[in-house]
Image (tube, rainbow, N blue to C red):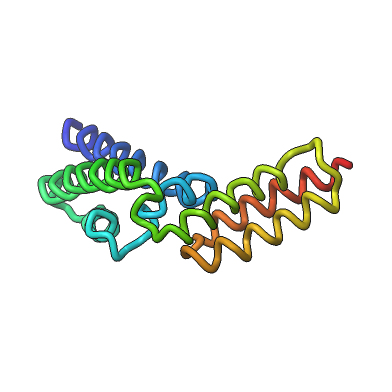
Length: 157
């Protein structure tokens, strides 16, 4: 029984990290604020992705000790990658890319604002997505989330 509880605790801890990273990838504004967390060329992010895979791969292994080690590594990798991305922000981008990110944020805010008219919001959304795509890789989950939000906002009018 103790072993089963320990494994359940490890599952929960792994899920916390996995869910936090998934929440990040579906929030386009978070991706714009912390692009390093979506850049596998960043060592901290690469370690996070490798740790996610390693924890998944030993999840069903009979040896809980191996799984525990992988979950601990995953938690450490998540904290390091997230802290690095928050600290770096968009500073590590070239000046032109930083300006483009700031412009894209403004456009997305306009696109999601109920106060604007439907045509303005739709145009702002299209420009933002096009602009962002030239700067950083946008997780498809983030695009889908924004499209769903934009569609709901546009349909209310």
